[in-house]
Image (cartoon, rainbow, N blue to C red):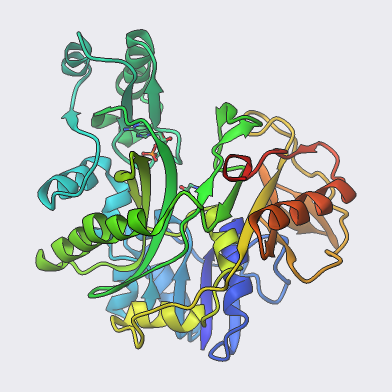
Length: 421
Ligand code: AMP
Ligand code: GLY
């Protein structure tokens, strides 16, 4: 198969690592990729316009791709899977309708309500005045969410009414989130511990991947501002068999059956962000794609041919009802540019050695090749990812590498997976 992988993050580096092991792969191209990919693999940014249906369709047809794998949410929400269906090219990822589960929080909440999937109670607001009125006499904390895609920045967990009002102002009045600012969800705050669970779906059935937990805050002790994710580990010990069963029966099954009954079978990856309290999982959010950095950890745990499973998902028929997972644990520690998620320098030179053992992998994220050098061009630069028999060993392998390979103007958290050890 000649495969086109879309995306440029650590997630895509990890997916590429895994599908390169497949006998089904004849050629891999990546658009736009990062400094971890070879020159031959990379399709330069201006080759086609990912936002434009004809442009994508023409490029894919001309280059005779057999299969498209979509990493990030934006092209899915734009409808790339439907565009590919029109020209009969299988594409991993949900249809535009189903991707709206991530594209609109209001849409996702309505479906959860309809299919009785456990989640926080909520109200939807279309204007500032009514939203403000609703806040009066409400218990704090409360959660304010801009409706649309906001690159992970549209959510505020407000500890006070003042914070909640500020959040509403920035969405409705300052329009910080553009068109996402026409609708707001105000949601009950859920206590508990968060985890990410991914299911690969073929429209009828689903295969659950090992549960992961990520660290969203920038600093040790889960302090500091929210980031795209500073590290993750899998399988997360908190997800015992009982909770996993509940996630399957009360979350994935009703969601996927409900969508199918509506005439919109879900194919591709369904990401359930859950909150666990007293052994009960509730949905925080759904995403229509693999999570980053959880995917980097999960890829090291998969025994089976991921390319085959993704292709079967896109074609709408799995050939097996189980997925084989390695015994052991994996951990990723993200190396980020100093200052991230605020202002940070770019163009940091990356001179690091290859890991000395075959259990540690360096997944590139915000990097690019510039005249034979690898330099940073994003906030999250590399993901140091290790597999081992125990969680502690996988953590140690990551820090052993990081302590022996210094990158200037960068930092990483020292306590990844600490809460599970
Ligand atoms: P989301 O983009 O919906 O995942 O929200 C981003 C983050 O905000 C989540 O990962 C949670 O840490 C937090 N969050 C969102 N909704 C809630 C909620 N109802 N209760 C508590 N925390 C929440
Ligand atoms: N790690 C969180 C996400 O991918 O949304």
